Image (tube, rainbow, N blue to C red; front, side, top):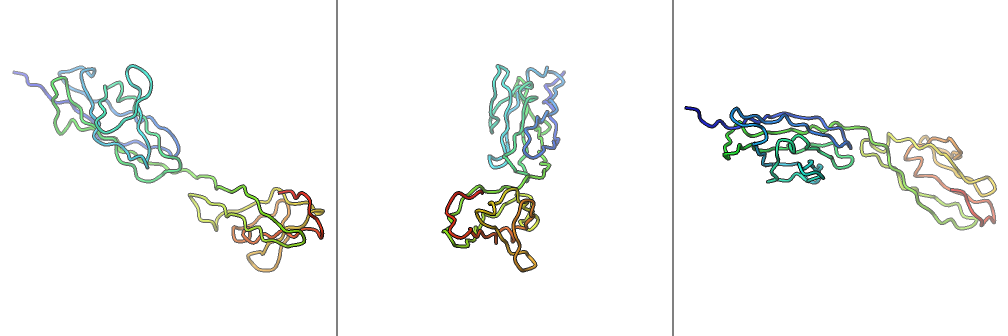
Length: 212
């Protein structure tokens, strides 16, 4: 006398590259007495909002958000995608779900899981666009906001100068890490500590426009 067997789900993992929406492509559940179309997946765990978001393509079209208690068909399960939060490369809570057949049956083997393993990438540094007031005939420290990099410490960043005021407007100087005074010119490279010391000295009596 046959009995109704519970569906079988898979525990697996997927690599997700930082800043990249990735289809998780879960292995579809199976059930010896039922076709896949008769199986229902009920979501029991998703990543936190601080980690990213799971979405899927509903059978009727469009895009849906996967949350705890969301129910999915097998075709919807196959479309689940994880989009990490920008620049996030830490631990991610797994995508867990329970499979039931058309009689509502499940057992321990019906619990599926996709572990999400973040693969970090090198993020570019961030710099600031800002302005400073300089009083005529007064050498002024520009005190630029220091650049930042989520992957690196400030000491490992290099600033390459691409534009300076003209000689008719004034001169920019800095204090080299080894001491003394250096002139800032196009193509000068600065460390973050040198960058912090940049000073603009205007030409005597000059009060016109100054190039950035």
